Image (cartoon, rainbow, N blue to C red):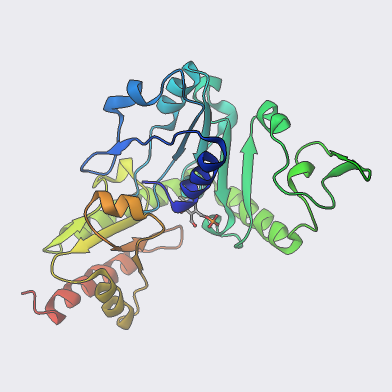
Length: 294
Ligand SMILES: Cc1ncc(COP(=O)(O)O)c(C=O)c1O
């Protein structure tokens, strides 16, 4: 259920190192199939990487449970929190160490911030060990003609002139969310997701991809309508002023698992109102009648 951004880098790494990439399967309701956890996470496992919340299926994954298992075999746990950071009240400091990710990343534009910037959080010992991945100005301790030494974290990872405007914007976004309070944001997201799931369930022929209970998912809800192409659904909704996304949502393997090329996805956030969900559901009813589905 990973976003391509948590697939492709690992593929590039395995090509470089000869490591093998292994996958958890998915259950029919879009959760990680943990039944084979002991065969998948073994003494040979070096890294376990997963998304905290799926951007396609919406599933909230049991990061603590998986991290605990991974740490038992000495593997590093890397978490993509791009969908989790905006909607869950994550408090890494209060997590028991054995359940905490070793590295966690999220992107700026999902936390009402700018594009092209994000956050990498890491356990200090891991970050200290990691070599720089880009070279340039600002990240050095000293540079000689033969070799260079690097500044301590975080600077060794920030080669070149930083994206100053984006960093200021991201800082303001994080402050804004902090001011609203992530508990309040989470409560709103849960309520609006439950309301949306209820509305979508009333549309005949509509199947939600992923869990159908609000408590185990986030507010990105991908669905199919039998007999209408996902892009047609999106176009008809657009004509009624409802913006959704159609496509593979950068999660092609997850779509393949469910035997589809693409899906239509609604996404709610802190500004989404029940009236907007009603407009979506009305739009879907209209779509069905437009395509003469009865
Ligand atoms: C779960 C998830 N991971 C990763 C990303 C990628 O973010 P970016 O393209 O900014 O690196 C996104 C969305 O954009 C996402 O939803």
